[in-house]
Amino acid sequence: KSFKFEIRKGDCGWSEGWSDCDKHRGRHELSAGGKDDIIINGEYWFAWSIYLPEGHENLNSMNTNYGQFHQKAGSPVFLFMEKENGYCLVKTIEDDDYQEVLLVSNKDFVGKWNDILVNVNWSKKYDGFFQVWVNNKLKYRGPTKTMEKVYFKFGIYRSYMNRYIGSDIPTTVAYFYEIRKGKSKETVIKGLMK
Image 1: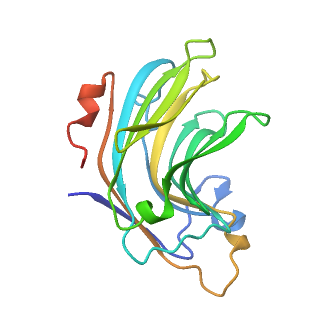
Image 2: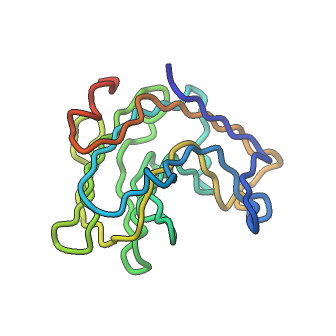
Image 3: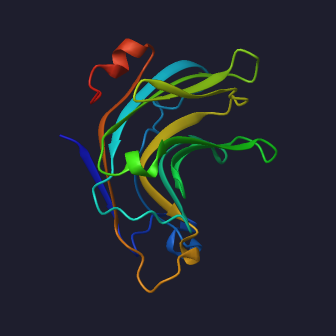
């Protein structure tokens, strides 16, 4: 069994003082942002499998995220975003520290399950790191540079929807399987597809 996320035009998140619809955004996400789920520092492992069904349309004129590590008191630091060429890791820790890394090309992102494994040590010191494997291949390794309280969100989050050219923005569907967080690799990889 897996989680199915589906977002259509007009699916907007809101909270007191904030409306996605007013800011050209839409989302269906689950968040590990509760008191016991906030990651302050230290080493953690995360794993999930993601699947986009055949017929999926890449809406690269807007931003479509399928997961993010978000600061409790600030902006996201690492986004898993669909770009023109496929599924990418987007590092946005600081204004002068932006980076995009292709994780899965378009041809391998749609119609196939892809396993994502993340190992992170949240630290501003030299021992801080963020590593990402896709289908058992290391795709990224870099520093974290943050010790703000960070938590993980997954699902579908679209922003800059006003950039879309056309009358109706297509529906986006994504499936997630075996989403896990743990203190060791062994505790998170047992359910992955590959």
